[in-house]
Amino acid sequence: MIEIKNIKKSFNGKEILKGINATFEQGRTNMIIGASGTGKSVLLKCIVGLIEPDEGAVEFNGRNFYKSDRETKKQIRREIGMLFQGGALFDSKTVAENVRFPLDMLTTMPLDEKLDRVNTCLKRVGLDHAMERMPSEISGGMQKRVGIARAIVMNSQYLFCDEPNSGLDPNTSLMIDNLIHEITHEYNLTTIVVSHDMNSVMEIGEYIMFMHEGHKLWEGNNDNILDADCPELQKFLFSNKLVRKFKEEH
Ligand SMILES: Nc1ncnc2c1ncn2[C@@H]1O[C@H](COP(=O)(O)OP(=O)(O)OP(=O)(O)O)[C@@H](O)[C@H]1O
Image 1 (tube, rainbow, N blue to C red):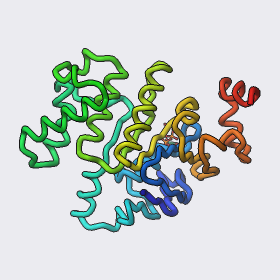
Image 2 (tube, rainbow, N blue to C red):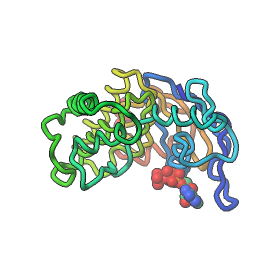
Image 3 (cartoon, rainbow, N blue to C red):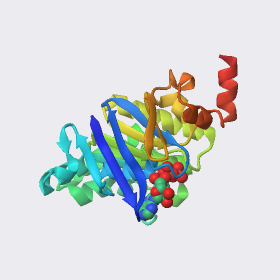
């Protein structure tokens, strides 16, 4: 579980995050949604420790990250898996080497154990046949799957995904969403997905937090979001034609 308490962050005197509180439960696909420029990525960076908030706390199963000593911070970082927007694979490394990278950097695991873990994770995302391929030789969806395998290779407890569907067609997006969702449940991860994609939100959003201009305006799930009593959220949702149609039909 991750709890964030009163997170505030300003850049050059402009307040971007205005005191955000939320609880992201374990074994659940948690989503942060909202319009462009509303602070979703900054919040995610504050949670993963890439940007230090001006105020507030981020607690990983009760461990306050920014108040922790170096060792505890290092330990928490090891428990974090991150799927970056563009996949962020190393072009000069094979698929297997990309997935192995965190093990090489952060552990002293014997080579055969590393290879074993790489194999297990690639198998889990359905890419054990592509171990020796280069990122440029595989599709965007496959690259995202490699990113997911790399994000879980350290036996991560926390999985963060920044716009996992960017640049993917609807079918591939759905496959990536379902994979993230299944892995979250299978490994009992605390997963946080930042997304614009209403299909994803409706498909996998077990907890949804809606941000608007640096505030959390609403929280709920994919069962109750369409009936949310929040005008800004309604406006955000119903700018999407498919959502409008869905609402009309139900
Ligand atoms: N390092 C930074 N320095 C200054 N301003 C920043 C920095 N990072 C983000 N911002 C500003 O913070 C605001 C929120 O940005 P953020 O990237 O969090 O939005 P977002 O909700 O993730 O948008 P999008 O959906 O388009 O990615 C923007 O106005 C952005 O310019």
